[in-house]
Image (cartoon, rainbow, N blue to C red; front, side):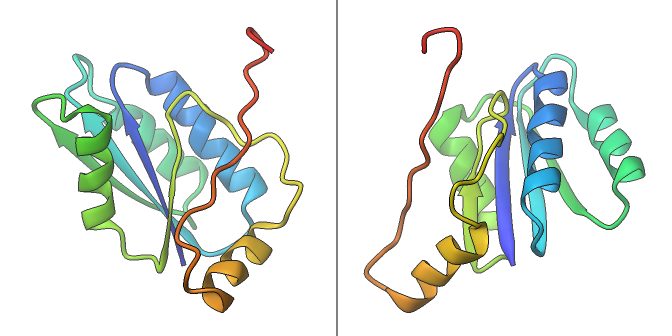
Amino acid sequence: MLSIVIITRNRADELTRAAESCIDKLKIEKEFIIIDNGSEVPAAASLEMLRERFPREHFLYEYERTNLGVSGGRNRGYCLARGEFVLFLDDDAVIQTLKVPVESILKTFEDRPEVSIIAAAVYDPEYR
């Protein structure tokens, strides 16, 4: 199973788009761990909407009263992850294309224990 950790702060709409892109592109067993880093308006309502739209997906939501920062939020998400593999995705990022199927990437981790991280290419259309 793949655990997808998304930290967010005051960006519920972006969070929804990020999660939807994972559901659309990653056709494997997965769980979503959402760490809400002290949002002024918590993203819990967005998570309920995702749960209703995608009842087969597993979502874990944790609201932090204070902003843990990027690394603190990711560390908290990692501690909650149940998957053998963890994907960290920014709340304003979406998966548009996969040039390599995620199953192949996870197989690389299984076959080559010396590989512990793979970075994805990021494209920001505003800055090209």
